[in-house]
Amino acid sequence: MYLRLTDEQRMVQKAIRKFVEKELMPLENEVLRNEREGKPGLAPEKLKELQLKAKEAGFWGINTPEEYGGANLGHVMQAIVLMEVSKTLVPFQFGGSADNILYYANEEQKKKYLIPTINGEKKSCFAMTEPGAGSDTRNIKMTAVKDGDEWVLNGEKTFITGGNDADFVMVIAITDKERHQASNGREGVTCFIVDREMGWRSEPIYTMGPSTPASLIFENVRVPEENILGELHHGYKLGLEWIGYARWVVGARAVGAAERLLQMAIDYAKERVTFGKPIAERQAIQWMIADSAVEIEAAKWLVLNAAFTLDQGEDNRHLASMAKLFGANMGNRVVDRVMQIHGGMGYTKEMPIERWYREARLWRIYDGTDEIQRLIIARNLIKGHVKLGQFI
Image (cartoon, rainbow, N blue to C red; front, side, top):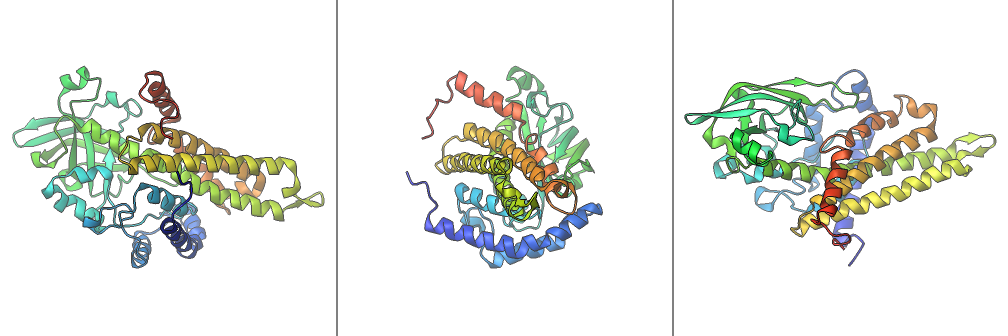
């Protein structure tokens, strides 16, 4: 067992950190100003410009297979990259990647959807959540009815990340109601690739945070048979794989943001003087800093363990739930302490803390709520699916 980054991993980490500090952090005031004015934090053309700069530096398709032009650095490296990028509130992501389940596409689908997505020519989104089916995916109502060589989709998806800008959606719909009911929602649903031009529309959902998810409305949207992704009636497995991958990623983002926030608190505490002393000398402040540092390290190792397990080709769903649950809650506790340390200034929109505060609250909800993660973790242990200590 070796609990340190390799020389190669450390080199990539330093390069990413330099890119974030040089290219992204200087844009933070501009992003905050744009968001206050109701504009996107980062204009699409600016995002593309930054992605091309990153590509020139060798960062393109961080975890995309080499056959598609990616770096294929693995999940541990992706976790490290996410932690570094999340140290800024600038809404940036490296180009050259695609949703993990899109790799299940057949050759024709790869040419039409996967390759253009990797190349940045198309944008995708994944849609499973519905107004009455969030954590309880068994309650999905959207239907797909066969009509000749086409399927007719009807229903609504909600809180879909990227849904306002997507050119196509990978959407889950019921294709066999009896099978869906008999299997407790695990079968009888299928994943379809649906172009926007096929007729679905999106409506923005305005939230307390910086993101604007979408509702997707399907009214007799006709989808050709060849647009089925994966196997007919077995789309639930793809949905679980997409969600499971997203969970430990939330933990990685929380770690990165929390590290940046804690450093801000440390710097401020050494400068802010009250009653003749820097507040860094006050025990109350020291304890908040200490507790935050310990929780960040704990969350970091949970995330890296989940990513490492995935790199080994092993089932990491239990670890992903643990990384998501602890990481998201850690992030919320840290940003709250950092705001408290900054006092009134931390509450203003002149600083990024309140913005992170609003964003962090979402981490405990999307891609599986705290309650769902606890349910999964406890169920795995009680039913014996996972043994204590089996991952070390």
